[in-house]
Amino acid sequence: MTVSPACFRNVRILTGPTGSGKSAFAARLAQRWNAEIVAMDSMTLYRYMDIGTAKPSLEERAQTPHHLIDVLEPWETANVAWWLEKAAAAVSDIEGRGRIALFVGGTPLYLKALLCGLFAGPARSPEIRARLEAIAVHDGVETLHRQLVAVDPTTGARLHPNDVRRVVRALEVFELTGRPISHWQTEWSDEASKHTPLAWWLDWPRSVLNTRLDDRVEKMIAAGWIDEATRLLALGRPLSREAKQALGYVEIIEHLRGERSLPETIALIQLRTRQFAKRQVTWFKQLPQCIRVPMQNEGELSLDVFDAAVSTHRTNNL
Image (cartoon, rainbow, N blue to C red; front, top):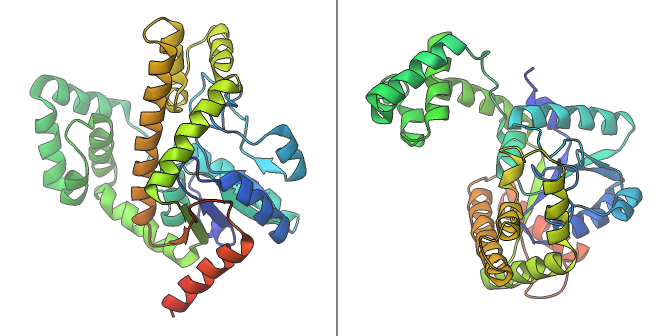
């Protein structure tokens, strides 16, 4: 199923790096706008992963309806296309009741899909995939990548030769449709640009954000994150490839297996969390549809500061 960008033309989006205070501020915006919150987070989809994903509490969810939280088991998988379809259904439900859908979260691919659209593409062909993957194995990934560059230089320049999965998909789309995947993605982005929703991202000074992140990891550990990871192991089924991408869980599970001490584990989670936040900020800066909201060095964001940032953006873009 292909989701039209028009589904999201009236939604609002609040994003920012992990630990930037999105959830708390979103609750205030939701009250102001008579909105319901749709989680734009690939990790809060999973049940039993509450502390480490900074999932809104049951009390917060009772105050403001939330959607797309706790909808998957930790061993289940999800991709951007699946999420976009579920998000469109949530928006239809919310707007059908006369309320505003407010997307809150920091998963860059989900954000980009909302703002720029997503080309779902033709159904996969096992025969074509097997043939292309065999080329990568027998002739090398560089040979496969050169094939992509020959038919789709734009995508070839964007993808690394080692990204075999995406290289195969790009070649598969070309074989099935006769046009490069970059053509289809541009076509979808052009449609999305006609329905761009309002979006804001919270931008903290780097040093302040890093301190917030380090403190948050320690608070999560104190709140029982290790016990939560222990319960995940007791489920008896391994985490899916997607669920394993949640910050900190794999590191804690490795600690539980004796691979490193608790202080070493905490330091590693803090480092990887800071690195992830830096990558998120890079994404947000590359999306001109997102309005930057500069955060103060201390204290929570006020609605007045938020309104001022929005007003400044409008003035500068007249």
